[in-house]
Structures are given as structure tokens and as C-alpha cells.
Length: 323
Image (cartoon, rainbow, N blue to C red; front, top):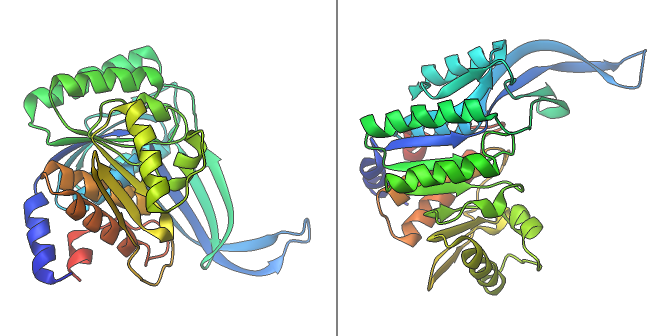
């Protein structure tokens, strides 16, 4: 990959208008040092030094898209709480539209708190609601999304599912019906629940673990096995492009009779957290620009590997790619 190739790719995807719909969260990091064990129980005592907050889930996808030069709207539900306000502030600071980020007294903002001693992960505490959003909130969300679609020419929709309740069987079907009415391509990053609800989408991107948990036969990271798995998915979902991320084994992509398996580019890996968010973001922008399969897979894999060189969740950016 050369700077010229990167520049050409970035120029073509710049300014794409993207709507992200899905489960947002905030990642809270409590960092410090440990030099003794508690006398009350055999656990380390963290001398707290710093607290850091980062957008997570679908909000991290929005960060990746914005970092690549897209104009991004984020549609989701948060609680009327401090973490929700913090998340909104972080998104606005990154030029992401929050008009569709709806507060609800009935929900809480998902927060994942990680306690870290240097780079050592000591503990994670999750605070969340996983039940589906109620009918009134869904109706309000769809009305607001419809208004945005009528005012802006959205190039592509990314549906980012973390099984936290924004994307349920009911909401997925209503949202897909809406996006089909507007003839907008849709890409999906699924989770274990609702896996087969995403029908007739443009791109469907499970990882290998999600695929293995959802299919009635074993799947291995080789071309023959992945072609069989993809054919099964297509028979159930009738989607156009299938992308399967394989961690250190690379990325698989196909469209009908086209099948590609690209190996992971060798790099020093510090942390794989957030790599899937980068892959779906870059792949979505490439789909919006109607790139061929090889180009979609290459840049999605390249950027996904690039962010793994950094500890913690690190979104991709134009500067990072050029460097």
C-alpha cells in the first residue's frame, strides 16, 4: 500500500453521509498502580490516578466513520443520566450528529468500567439494560430517522447490534422496511441474538465466533468451509455481500460467485478490541462508493489490523492511515 493509493481511497469516501443505528455505550477506564494486596480480602488495591471515557459500541463505529471523513448521524437510545450526557458530549466533540440520540427515563446508558493497573486488566463492571426499547421510544426514533432521510441524502446505513435492546426483532424489521422504501444500502454487524432477522441487506458481517454459534454445522477458517457457511447465510438472509472476519486468520468476502480470502497483514498486535467496529465502518464506506470486492476487503482488513497496534479501543482516522 502506498500513500498515493491511500490518498485516492480517502478522497473517494470523503464526505459520505452515513446513518448509524444500534446500541451505544460508554467505556470508562479507571487506571492507576498496584503495589499491595488488600488486608480485607486477597485482592489488589488500585491507587487510582486517572479516569477516561470513550464512546463504545455503535458510538465507536460512528467515531471510525467520522475519522475517515464521513458525515455521521447516530441513532440510538440512552438514559437520562450522567453517562448519557458524557457520551453525547464526546460525540459532539467528534463532529457526530446527536439529533437521533434519544434520552429515556426508562433506560440507562450502557457503561463498561474497566479497572486497569498500567496495561494489566484487573476487573470489568458492566451497567446496562438489555430489554428491547418500548414501542413509544421506537416510534419516536423511526419518526426522527424518517425526518433525517427526508432532509439529507444518506449514502448508507450501518446497523450495529450489541444485543442491548435498540435493535430487536421488531425494530429491525421496521427499520429495514423504512430503509428499503428509501432505497438506501444497509450494512450489518450482527450479534448472537437477532442473527437471522437481517434479511435483504447489502452487506452482512459476522465474525467467526458469531458464525459458529449460529450455524448448524462446524465452520473452519478455510475457503471451502467459509464458502459453505456463506451459502447457508445467503439462503437464509438473501443478502448481497457477506464478510466474515477471522481474527488473525484474515477476512473472507463473497458476492454470489466471487469468493476471496485475504490473510491478515503482519503487524505487532497490542489489542484487538474495537477492530470489528473499524472493519464494518471502512467496509460500509467502500460499499457506498461501489468499490469492488477486493478493494472492500483489503481496506477494511488493513484498517482493522492498523487499530490493533494500539492499546485499548482506538478508532481509525485519515491521519493514522496516511502515517
